[in-house]
Amino acid sequence: MVTQVIKLLNSFIPLSLSSRIFLICLVLLDAAKSETYTVGDGDEWSSGTNYVAWSEKHKFMADDVIVFKYVKGQHNVYEVTESTYESCDTSSGVLGKYESGNDQVKLKEARKYWFVCDKDGHCLGGMRFGINVMKSGGQTTNSSSNPTPPNTNHHHTTSASSKMWAHSILCSLLPLGIFFINILNY
Image 1 (tube, rainbow, N blue to C red):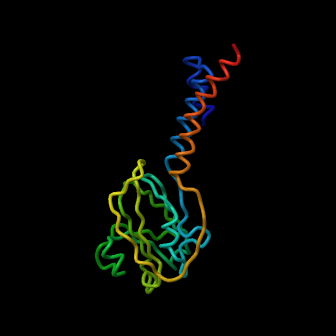
Image 2 (cartoon, rainbow, N blue to C red; image 1 turned 135 degrees about the vertical axis):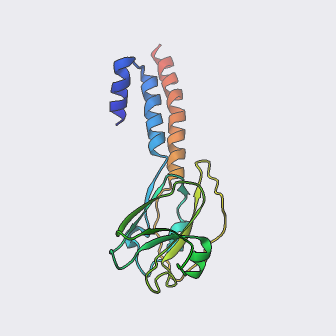
Image 3 (cartoon, rainbow, N blue to C red; image 1 turned 30 degrees about the vertical axis):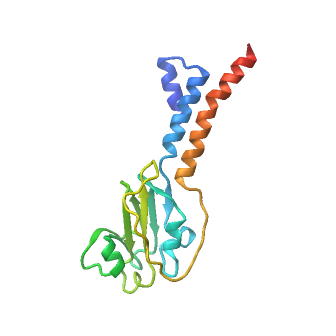
């Protein structure tokens, strides 16, 4: 994709090396803005996993996508209000229903999201979690905490915000490196 953008731009205006590097950084920064997370990592969306622990190890940002993978018919996913999350009573407070077995939920805005499985006993058994979704500046609009269901399961991944930070540092240092290379060549 990066080479296609540069070729297209080069056909209109020849670009210097520093301009090409700058464009590459812009494309990398755009790609670093969103992440896709599989809920429960390798355990996916199933009974017996501590989803609160899973959700607390990630820093979710607006435009990230969370994917619920499960056996269709055995589980489902409801996006709910906080009070519905706490009670596990889905007779009201349901904001969205997902039942495909491979549900992709885009976290469109910075706010608190709550998810439960509506199959009998699953929510009360721990198939529920809430997440704070942050703006790109790292701010959330709600800071309430999750009640912790039983069981623990830990996996480690890199968050989108730390990847974005690394790309920002890289793109900030590249022009300085090009400057010194140009000085050495004179």
